[in-house]
Image (cartoon, rainbow, N blue to C red; front, top):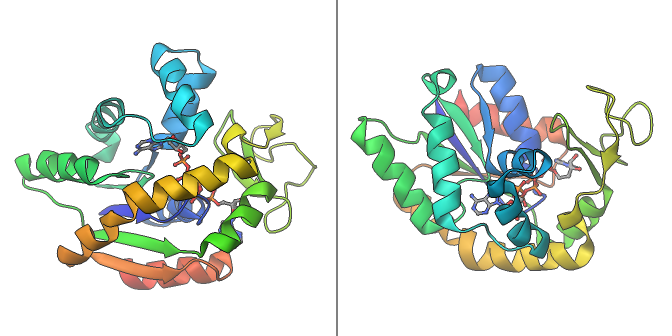
Length: 213
Ligand code: AP5
């Protein structure tokens, strides 16, 4: 099963992707998480990516495509994966399609988690992230057991640098300009499915599993 999660920043792609990965036994592949791991480890790729991420801009396609194709070529992706945050541009989508085409495969579904902009800014200011293990919380909807401490690994939780309101506004603009055209791209391919991302997480997940089977 190969599934792409689409949606604005903060729509809940990561939350749902983790649940899908667990339910269907496929890896959750997040380009954002991979970039954050590189930043944390002080790699050259991380230093380069951070400049764009902190400004709410997209990391250039050539860097993003490389990291993604390396990841999905790994053994654990043989039976599929759920992509979270990739593709984000039409050129990225085309590279993925071409790479899959070469091995006689294709994306099964692109799931758009639909949340209006006005809900997003509020959600993002409440998000807390663990930069060690990638877990995500929300101070109202998914609070950790102990404030600001990750339930899973005990590390400190942070407000991501790019979750500050000014940066979120720019990320939304970038989303509408560069990522939203993917909705038409996957509609044309007949694999777009839209779910209402304003519903409680479990209801969003039920809508997704009804699609994926
Ligand atoms: P990335 O990490 O992918 O960020 P994003 O797409 O902006 O998505 P987020 O992780 O912010 O949100 P999400 O939709 O996963 O929501 P979440 O589940 O956490 O990318 C970061 C940056 O990396 C980009 O800006 C770019 O610079 C770069 N990058 C990454 N991929 C790239 C690519 N392919 N090309 C170029 N650059 C790339 O949920 C949000 C909050 O809401 C959480 O607190 C959660 O608990 C809560 N929540 C979730 N669902 C619900 C619900 N149903 N009800 C109430 N609260 C909910």
